[in-house]
Image (tube, rainbow, N blue to C red):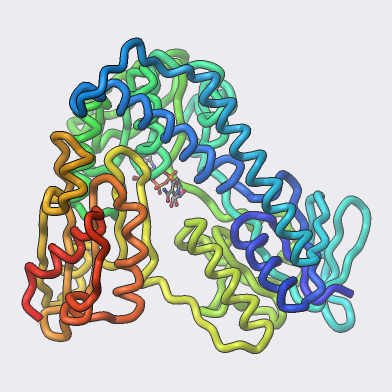
Length: 455
Ligand code: NAI
């Protein structure tokens, strides 16, 4: 009998398996596709490879602003897609090596929970049964496919999701994106730079969902400058050959031309068909119900990552997996979500952690807000000709601790962890003023912005 069976080899599953293996547990991990899950194979990593090529192209086409002459720059989409494959392959192999290093047994099969056995649980895969004292369910999530006429019939062809969009053989002339959230925006950024006419259709009156509104408004303006068309508050009523039919706020019909349609309206936890009913594991929309330690309602059965349906971010999944393993091993640990950063990796980057100004107001918290253009960081000016950006810090008026940090501008993704630490450690304005930031870095914008506030 294994000490632990992990279902799913994405960020939650593989990281937890490694953690457990290194701690001396005998671990078995099932993965039906490729190690690394959606993040590594069809999400975070390949999209960053594509976006980086778009950034390089943008730098090349704006090189004269930096005194550099570049002639004939162009994007070779098939070569970019091929490089993305190479990056993914290298990292998938890396995860395999990690599993080996931690002594984790990996079985590349679809596993289904069979039920209880003395001292644990049974799982079946490819006709063979396996037993584990504990279970960690980390089966991830899948793209939501709505029952809009024309969507399901054309799925994988004219209508694509996060997987196909990363490996399209050619750049569509007209590219319609349904959903102006993270996936939609990142792919809009790549394809508009690659030459598509991109239209983002979003049912809300703003893009980037829960992002601080001031920041998402700035992001939308930057995208509009690049040529992305936005149809906000538009309801998709049908997808037909060559077009997406929407309903505008005034009830009129709008047709968006499309050679390809990306569906990016959110994700749904994968908890069907894995045998949860054989144990009676409780689910509730949006996913498997867990406590702050990743425990389900069944003693010995844990869940981590997108399958719990909450934050659906790879870095959150890593941490949830670690908390679950620590709990299994009797170590005190708990999942906190108040310092959980999120990033949109476009140019400009958007990075946030903590509460948005809208959330702070809605919670009735008395707060102060300091805001500075990223141009207050010398390095930003040196490296961003004509660029602007914003750093916004919200603090509790009385206690002076940081409630939220929201940034738009280059390197924000690499800086935000520091802001997450400030929230996690409950640092006050005074504490942050005592931190020495390296000069010149864009991270100094945090220091500059914090100095706008009284201790
Ligand atoms: P999302 O939840 O970020 O955004 C979906 C958007 O679609 C929302 O703005 C929603 O209002 C809109 N929408 C929903 N139904 C619609 C309809 N019928 N018509 C028009 N608009 C509609 O979901 P997305 O972009 O699919 O991403 C899925 C998950 O992947 C997210 O949970 C995200 O956290 C994660 N992800 C994270 C990334 C990152 O951290 N950089 C990158 C990509 C994905």
